[in-house]
Image (tube, rainbow, N blue to C red; front, side, top):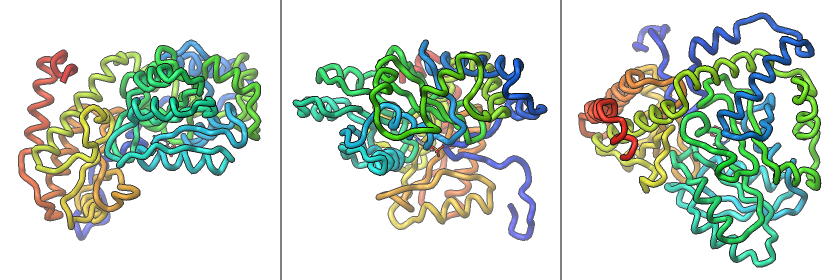
Length: 402
Ligand SMILES: Cc1ncc(COP(=O)(O)O)c(C=O)c1O
């Protein structure tokens, strides 16, 4: 926005890692009269969503839909499977892992926190070692974030499953996919996850306010003996009502219309194409950051996130001041920084309904913002991103293998 104007022209660049920009198709699907949530039309819509979600989580087990943000689905995963005083293993990958751990403590669980420097994902070997040391097999659940949104680090869920098995440990496996689902490959059944936590406002391209628990047989069995108090979050009432296409309370009807559309859009594109697109945009973003001569917070390429890139600013440069300037002058929003790195980095979200041109626009705007804010950097980030995008389009298989 120019200094003497109160109007921001054109579309806002919403480059936060969720909520993501709403596709017009989702908006239009939600712009429809309210229907009776106990009537046959609703049951059809609910079934479509409940079945459709299974194809996104890649499961044949039930998926539960909560009218709540992701934090609610975190709580549901814990209170339906665990009992007061239960030990749970968590990994301190960043801010969101820390919040889940604090929640576990508030609920009366005893989390054990594997530390990291917030610059990598969860290391399967560290989990295996911790579980092997639990000779009495007292740890009841391993809780990991697939994608740590606060740092831009992705954890290898299939390998963590193998690590749990290698330790011969019976703990449940609870995984948060809030900022990875429908953006990068995820396989609830094949990877042996017991509860997957998901959210609507990122890869599924919906507004915030809806979240999910994908279940498995072992989780359903654990729910029979779990003693943490629960009412709104209880799976049993929900599962019984869902069987006939309804909810135990008034569901978020408009959000369900949007969800059905979001799922249809993902399948029209093809999930593998969705994942390849996110992979391509993420690598293009990293190409830009490297060309600028700036540092990516995720320090090990094995953990690079396909949905968000956190960029460290040089010592002495305030990332919050940078974000404020970029918003005021160029109408672009970035994700904020957290914890031990507060004020030191900003995050570029590249997930949801984003294409190459939108990303290039965002990166060009970022290059302008760096210059305007006086952040020392080299020119050429946009060119490096464009070069990557061209080569990824010209040779998709090579790009996927990179
Ligand atoms: C990985 C992850 N987990 C949990 C949450 C919490 O979700 P919500 O803010 O929707 O409650 C977020 C929010 O961004 C997240 O990114």
